[in-house]
Structure formats: structure tokens, C-alpha cells
Amino acid sequence: MGNIAIALATSTLSFSEFVEVKRQKRLEKNRVNGLIPAYISRLNRSDSSISTINLNGMGVDTNTLRLLAAPINRGQTRVTELCLEHNWINPEGAAVIARVLSHNVYLKILNLAHNQLGSVGVRAIANALEQNTVLERLNLSFCGITDDGVKKLAESLDRKSTR
Image (spheres, rainbow, N blue to C red):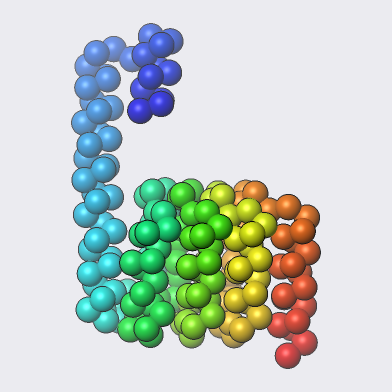
């Protein structure tokens, strides 16, 4: 909606373009509202055919993460790649991800770029990485991590490599 307001303020959209943008946003919202529950339903049914979950830019928040994480934490799935870039994941959501990392034995790739994890969220993830033995790639770019968070992450990875 913010983009539409800016576009209208600068008179760059005609009325028909505005209607089309609104229609596209409604379609996208319906797709997102259908996609996330479909993943959750399949995960809860222990659908082992899901190896990749790509919800980049889908508005995933802490509540959605909890619903996705429950079957993963119970070991009902074999998800190897989880893509959550450009969402609304905050430090509380990072704690949910940390629990997944602590328990999961399949997840090899995790993309959390462009979320507001901050150093608090990264600390939770760093602690979980010390226990995780399978994760191979982790993207935390543009997550608002301070030097303190980077230091904790480095310490955790160093501890993990000495085991």
C-alpha cells in the first residue's frame, strides 16, 4: 500500500494501472494465504517429499514460524533447505529457528537474509549452532547484527569446529 500511495502522490499511475496493481496485490495475498497453510498442512501430515520450503518475501512472522517449526522439530519431515529471506522475522522468531537448529538432523541450508534478527536473535541461533551437526550454509546478511552478535557467532562456530 505504501508504494501505491507514493505512486499516486507523484502521479505515476493511471487509474487502470492502479486497479491492476490492486488486483495483483489481492491475487498475491490469496496465493500467500494459500501457500503457507498448504506447507503447514503437508508438514503436519509428515509429507517427506518436501525437501525445500521457499517462503522468501511471504510475510512470515513468529507465529507462522511456530506453525512451520512444530512438525520439523518433531522429526516428521526431511526439509533440507529453508528459505525465509525478506520476511518479518525478529529476535523472537530467531529463537524459534534456534529450536529447529537444535533438534533437526536434515536441515542443511538456511537463508534468513533481510530479517530483523538483531544481535539478540543471532545469539540464539549461534547457541543452537553449537549443537547442530548438519547445517552447511547459513545466510544472515542484512539482519541488523552488531559486532557483539558477530563475535558470538564466531565463538560458536569456533567451538563447533573444535569438537
